[in-house]
Length: 53
Length: 223
Image 1 (cartoon, each protein chain N blue to C red):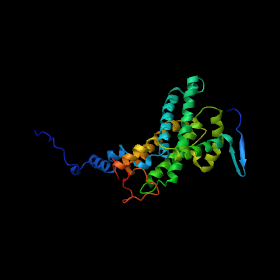
Image 2 (image 1 turned 120 degrees about the vertical axis):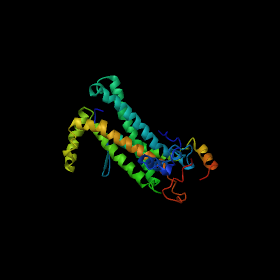
Image 3 (image 1 turned 180 degrees about the horizontal axis):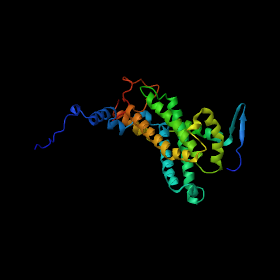
Image 4 (image 1 turned 180 degrees about the vertical axis):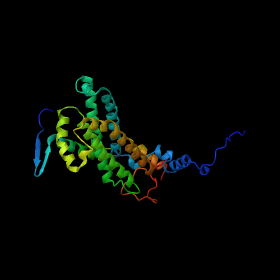
């Protein structure tokens, strides 16, 4: 906290390593949320089948 | 002397403003939509959890913020418990913003403003903007060198917009008052409105599914 963060430069883009890691982590969570199976998915789908729209 | 009748007047015959409000609420926000027992099958995805996690983060932020407001900066900078609660407040904010942005990404890519949900989307945008201002006023209210550094650097930018006359980032009392009283109430009320709006219309259908027969109607909520 007392020392300045390390920065990386990608062309015109300059970003600190902590912010870069945060963004990478958020993208990873987003992708994981899209592909990871949802635990209650089966029961929700059954409920849907029981009572179609 | 006549005794009042026990038979209630028909709903449509009630001419009072409370009756009109009650009929409007019953029509637009029926309890079956507000507190549904079942969800459509497409809600079975982790993407729909982001908004709830953001609200959970907000609850932690408000709870820890109330404790910090009671004891003050002389406590949250010095004592061990104070620093712990201060850290909960800080990390709660990080969780809130991370999952608000993830929620925004999810809703953006599924075009959640479809089928009469534009106002829900716009309220979400306003919540995000006001939350940013809330976070900023919090950073300049820390009562440490970090807060002074942020405020000194921000004042020129704020003054350049012309807002500095009534939004003085160097005025701790103003920033702290706005941070602990005004903006949390506004954000909380707007989030309640946002959730009610979602329940009124139901969760938006996936893009590949057929459009609603009657746009704007909550056809995708199964009571």
